Image 1 (cartoon, rainbow, N blue to C red):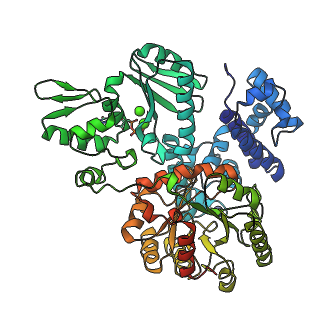
Image 2: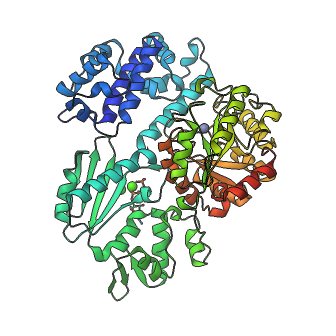
Length: 580
Ligand code: DGT
Ligand code: CA
Ligand code: CA
Ligand code: ZN
């Protein structure tokens, strides 16, 4: 490596070590230690190389003496001899198989040792030709699952979850603003400005009189690993994390048309161009042009829409899903905004798997201007998270009541994230649920059940009068785990009858419900809640991803429960039966 590896690259190396050790059947804790170190390095606010230069590697959680020596070697020489040694023992293609959602270390080792398979491609072929089912514990179903997993993996390498792309894009823009003083305007465009859940490439736009110094500064930003294309108005680079970024520089007087064009979507643009043609105008990234060849320059996006006799359309709606018709008829919704939210209905504390105390979570919520926070720790059967026994749950209630005495402008409510067990029953009996202010019911286990089974589970929760909210209804993890087989249409229709709310989980690896089902929920009259599922105070910042998903689903404040003031929220909860 001719430059210091990014935190993400180092994390990938450590995960490769963990993968090899895992395949070799090494001690579980040793494997976990490498994975945890990888997670911690990835979450560092600054480059690992900075800590190394300052001699502070050991201050990073999970980095002990042995690992700091290996990292020191890597940062000094660009190599890690321990990894090289391990790679002699297990072929790289076998380690790569662990990336497939359905393949664990035992399977990888089995297909390698018994069938001599050493690449994902060979694994695909073996699954397709029915060779895997010869192995112990494997059948036709396993083959199907592995094939679906390989498919999911290929998709993932093409598009990046928005939660990974957005911080990179914003950092590049601020780096650019810091190094060039002559920028008139800057913006993200493309799918990122529309807040699509996954991003193909990042599009950045800058207004400046002279593009040259902007391009020059851009290619020199520290995050840039490779310059793919260097032009006078467009430059494309690849970041150290492998993300492609296109930067375009336009003159300020053409900013409006450029921003409109590069925000897309392509389908929205095509519909808009047709509308322009009907009015004797041609619309391009540069300008609107009249039939006599005269250009109409638009410095602002509003001017482009105004010339086409439309109000400005929020980027989240620009997917050609009826927004142009709605704009024409004055039916655009007043979309929900972060500032409309009055509280959060799904948060964890150290009572289960959160990292902060109830008090710290409450103070963080209050500091954001929230008026209420519902503490919803995990229930008993989710053992890995330290789920609460009924006894602990009652102790927690006392703690919440104690804390509530100190605020007049803020209130903690006592809730639970109750596990919907594999057989569709809930973790607590109804009389325990009835003691709580708010019940979120979620599925975390048995996500691979078939459509009938898992839908029946979700429906059992939606029909339980003590359940208020169905948490992350599809169970997907963007880029990592496909949604479960649950029939969301049936779930939404049933929720419309029983009045249970659907969560829009704001965590950028979930965004669940997704935009399409948000819109369907609204159509059916199902209430929505936008939740961070916060496990730490910092998680409250993720709300913007959830709000964006709601906006992409055309949600207005009146569709969203946590836009209600406390009194009206409590009234809603009381009417539902769990509220005391
Ligand atoms: P992505 O990158 O796949 O996540 O999605 P976008 O929407 O960012 O697409 P991208 O990066 O290919 O192009 C950015 C915007 O530029 C796109 O949303 C609309 C506009 N655009 C690009 N190519 C075309 C085109 O061929 N026709 C039209 N009308 N617009 C285009
Ligand atoms: Ca793009
Ligand atoms: Ca692009
Ligand atoms: Zn949760």
